[in-house]
Image 1 (cartoon, rainbow, N blue to C red):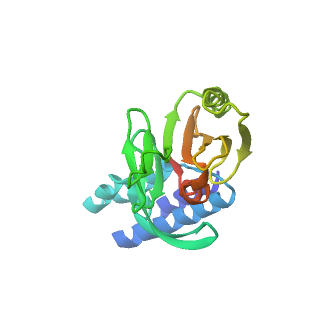
Image 2: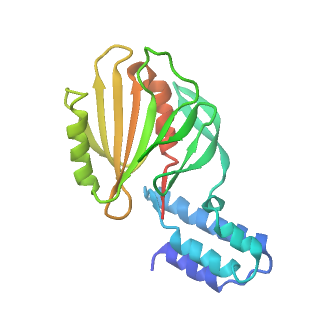
Length: 238
């Protein structure tokens, strides 16, 4: 039995006199478990057991408990302040929680700079203010492929990217900001040279998440750094 299972088993044994006290206690325990998982560089959170436990504790007792079950955002802080290092300067930023439209994940965005758009099969994070026409695209595309393993997906993505990035792509395994494979390429040396920074990670089952960043060389210390901090908040949710 892992730590998370022990946590839920213990929660089911508890008897809480008040709804708010119960909700707060469960959240603190889940938060502590998530912190431990992060220290181990895990980027997958299994919420199903947690949700069942909370349902059993609340559903037969109170309507507020049932309402809480309807919104997974209750397990995350809707808004928080983070500190980012941008171009050598520490910057305090308020970020807001967003849930993926096409896949089960959450991520925090700085809504003063970025917005999330729903595409046909993927989610796109792009700038709030449009860039000048002569600037390359600045965005993060998040897509799930449910039946392709990360090992296969990274090879397929490499073949696809080589059409636009003829120089050999850099491919490595990483544990930050997410755990998986990283493909990196630059199409030139000028300020507006296109940059691709793509991550391929497990979805916790038999598939993968492909997270593809696009920006330009001059924006590496700006948008590139902000994207890195943003992806640190990416969490797969089951």
